[in-house]
Amino acid sequence: MTNDSTDADKTRLRAIARQRRRDFVATLDPLAHRLAFKALPSPLARRIDSARSVALYMGLNDEAPAQRLAGQLTTMGKTIALPRTIDRLGSMEFLAWHPEDKLLPGLFGTSHPEPGGGAVVPDVIIAPLLAFDRSMNRLGQGGGYYDRAFARYPQALRIGLAWSVQELDVVPADLWDLPLNIILTESELIEGLDA
Image (cartoon, rainbow, N blue to C red; front, side, top):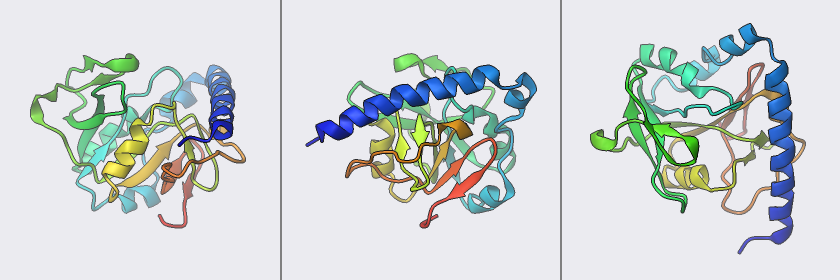
């Protein structure tokens, strides 16, 4: 059962977080924007060194652009996967992707690889978010897609990618909200206690 007070808080915080992110990206120097998230900081690169597959996402609008990490991850020999939203009920799978591959349009303005190759089990999931806090809580869009993916792949390292302005003092968390292990912003790498 959902707590109505928590739902109202999350709805309000989503609106605040979207506006903060939009304002920040609008004022960001174009060169700084292009260079952001082009490389993994060394501590994070070492943490995922043994991972075989890393799930990214194609950043939409003013989201932190995870796809920019694809070049370094490919050089590291990782299989890269992108999410494919299967339905509006929160079902999602990860499909292998190479940066030169054509993407197909998906639900909610997303894009994904051709589903013919089968799903990938990710060792690392790099997830978008609207807001985060220092307790490693993540506030997403509200569809539960990443919450379900985190639960489906409990062994996967959970990394949130965000602009620094998306940090809030407290992000309300429900019982099913799994905390992130690591958060990467354009200016900082934040590691949780269980990272």
